[in-house]
Length: 488
Image 1 (spheres, rainbow, N blue to C red):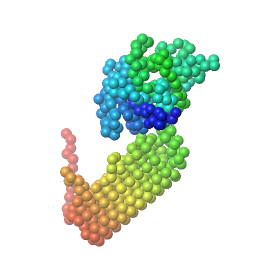
Image 2 (image 1 turned 90 degrees about the vertical axis):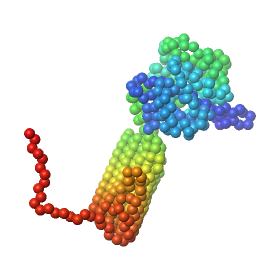
Image 3 (image 1 turned 30 degrees about the vertical axis):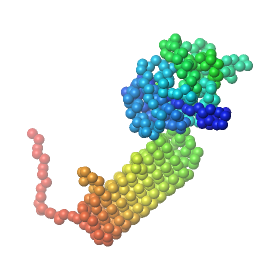
Image 4 (image 1 turned 45 degrees about the vertical axis):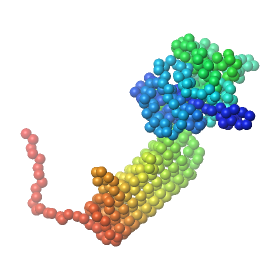
């Protein structure tokens, strides 16, 4: 049976909607942080947000987040990421007190209808892939309890998968139970197949099994894993879908584990990029905290950070130590070292063959045309620079239009803010702006005009003219500088 028929239904089969339940109530004591564990960031976003995103990919009918420690912080964090509006069927339930995993999932059941399949996930296990969960749903078949399992060389601390004997070995036998570490016998502790914490169960069965849980165990908690023995007793098949990718089931309990998983994630991103033809100077010194799309012959030097959504076209070169967020960079553009680009919501566009940096800053709404040059310590915000325009040194362009072939001098700025409102500056084609000029917006510099160095321009300058605004030089002979008073 295909996963599509299980989820969406086909002629002759019933529809099984998906409801995702995410356990996110734990305090995370070993993180040694006031921030709830599930809100610590991996690849630029909270652990819990990775899990919620997977639920979105699965087209879950309902996603139920079980909160506990820091419940208000968790809700606020997800709202910050737009989850409340971008995703229908998001619910929060509170687990208080926290009496174990079975007790946690039980809190979500009033929100979950009886006709679907429940996917149980953990908010601190961020990198489970949607295709893995689809395979687990297919294994469930709509009427089985399906467990995601993996073999660990050292299974200490994990619940062991206990199977029935098959041909003298329990390797291929049916799943009979999950035994937690503290309750396991020596023989059971020798088992290497462990339960990942992820399962799929028919909702109508899961609700019955949760109601039968007790806390007669070494930890005095209501174990979700005990539902396996109820399924076996009720004659409901229990199946395991085993994977060999440990990253997908890796949970976070400490800053050390978080850092290790971050590096594992980044190595995978780096490998995928290199397989696509991207040249990375050092794959160990790359951080992608969002989505990075590259065409062929892109090169990226060391210690670069990419956030939000970034697109690098063919032949783009990124220098060392750049931070680039929410930007699109056209073919053969060069971003020199230590450049900071952050488009936020408005985005940044760098045109074909443009040169940016080093030590440049492009802010939201910056649009650079072909062959534009933005040099060291130049900041551009909400401004468009047409083909061939240049601002090579120590300058600011805000709320401006800069025409073709303009040369914008060192130390010059657009004074675009009057203390209450922003105003635009228009610099038409072939204008030359000298060094240390202040263009007080709103103002227009006509095509081909020249602005003398040190000028403060408050009125429009006609095309083709020289505009100079300077005070008269005052010279005082034999003038003596003030001297510091001697201390007592």
